[in-house]
Image 1: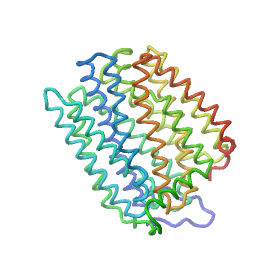
Image 2: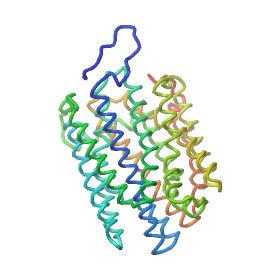
Image 3: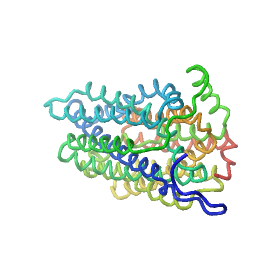
Image 4: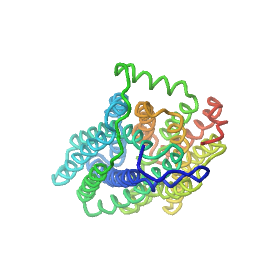
Amino acid sequence: MSDGPADPAGAAPPSPFSFRDFRLFWTARFCATLGTQAQGAAVAWQVYEIGRERGGVAEAVFLVGMIGLAQFLPLFALALPAGEIADRRNRRAILQLCVGAELVCAVVLALTVLLDHPSLTVIFAVLALFGAARAFLAPASAALGPMLVPREVLPRAIAMNSLAFQSASIVGPALGGLLCAISPGAAYATAGALFIACIGLLTLIRTHATPIAQLGSRMALIKEGLVYVWRSKIVLGAISLDLFAVLLGGATALLPVFARDILQIGPEGFGLLRAAPAVGAVITAAILARRPIRRFAGTWMIGGVAVFGLMTIVFGLSTWWVLSVAALVVLGAADMVSVFIRQTLVQLVTPDAMRGRVGAVSLLFISASNELGEFESGVVARLLGPVGAALFGGVGALVVTGAWARMFPSLRKADALT
């Protein structure tokens, strides 16, 4: 499977970092996520500034919400075929091609900054290409990680992968916000350099990354993955709970208007707000990497989503930036609990030959919650204002949590996470 120390009988599983290829994969994931987060913060700020100059705050908030829709539409169209390809082709090579496409996006976005009047059409077209790259990257990444460590190490590896993502999500938005104070182009250039580093690290991975060939037509294999998720009610309940809770409760798309026009803390404060959820998440991920949740998994997950909704309400009501940051930190910690449980459930119960397709279905749910959540927040903010949109989302997340606890009793009663 991978090169690394053997696990003596009766001994505790080794650290995922004792496996060379996992260390390379983890570092590459950190670099790619850091670049994506810095670039995402710069795009949100640039689009908000353009929209505010041309049509006022309401128009600007709506345009920021459109960032999510621009990325989601190509992702929605391509995710299922991408999952099938990840179960047939070299998963490492897929990742390298996708990060290469993200590098092209960073270069084009940097060029838009040089124009006196940047075109929103060009920016949204680049975001659509970025969404298409993500459609292929996410299933291949989810499927490659478990190939690099033994099965008994997988829960800790999942927590460490989450730690890489969340650590980069702390530094990335803050870095993007700080660079935006100079120019969004500086953030895009930094993202491009990080994407180049990611490609180089992936090149060094030696583990055989092509899964066993699957028999059947492309459509039959895609259908097989969909049926598998539908029949596994715990997995279906876990990923759909995340979908609807974050779809309604996501406040990320509203952060530019909160930073500039409600809390009045500027681009540096915007970077702090963007990083705050990841601060809570990375602390939680570090704890879970050492002490993974092993009992009462369903209760932990449902409780985490409920706290996520409650903190969204606190954030919406706050006019003090310290309280706003604290609410986002707790929100991120609660979300990390549900993410860890969902990812562990999916990876443990899914055969390697189907990980790409199941990862693609999970990606559709997650992206629908994140990107469509940004669009939903922008639309609701236009109707109710940013504060009303945050309150609507937080209450909606709480309602969804209660409904899913009743609709998916197997998820609520899920216990051992091994």
